[in-house]
Length: 182
Image (cartoon, rainbow, N blue to C red; front, side):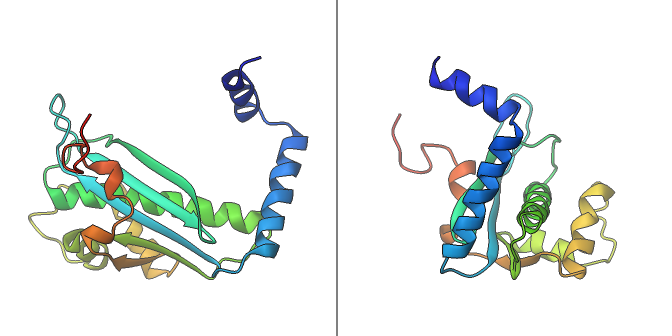
């Protein structure tokens, strides 16, 4: 049986033995880790890069206890009207992933000291803190503002990161921008 078939068979319908093995591996890693108990994520967006539909690309990457465990690069599900809004949507998706990862790790019996998401856009970071109604942001969907509550309740910390240090940048930039030739 080809590897891909085995992979799909077990990833789409894991059995009890598979879950026990995953938990054993994670408990082992938790006991042998030497790094901080932190979930660290990077979020980024590339505004209106899809030429057909005008949608932006989002990207995020997460490490748990120092190991990369989750990443995503995809078109946003909505059309955004500004780069700040595109970054805010990407940040919302990253926050949702961070909350899920924190719950998953906690369910496995491991403690998480901090959950941090890094973003390189000052406007998006300010939008998470500023409760004031602005004409330039009134169109942003209310469901995206749930991250204000998450940050206010200190479930996840947001920090500014330089664009050159943003680990999710690779998911949102074209090969040409990165200096890679096809």
